[in-house]
Length: 158
Image (cartoon, rainbow, N blue to C red; front, side, top):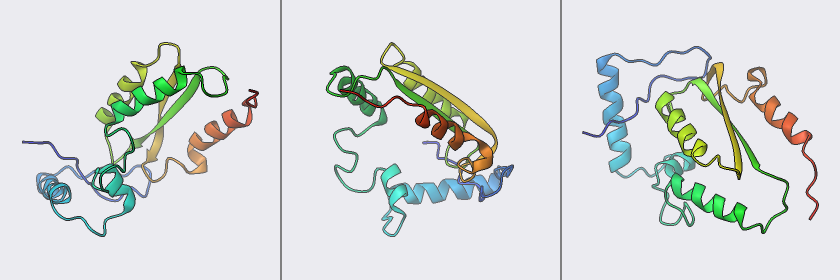
């Protein structure tokens, strides 16, 4: 049997715990089974994209995330861009996220850390007291970190 994600309750507030009682989990599994197998017309464009149900070719020349990393590496190492050094990638994970869990962030870290051999500098942080919906709020500090780094970048000189 394929394990399906737990949809859980709204995560609009920091500190919300996911419902894990057996009935809720069983209902969530049926909802996800339906979403993945049935006609899902009317669902949001983001959900269609993430479920890979938005039509053929929507993911471009790569159909899996792992393929994207290989494509990015090839493009970056070809040198057809302004050379400003390594790509620096900082990933911020919410402490509680009903869209993904700790296994997903560990998988993501593993993928990118396997590529950390000179062409990319990867780092990640789980931001305390945040959810999927609140991680980009000013008080979390995640966006401040991103914009501070961007403000201090040297301009590209070809």
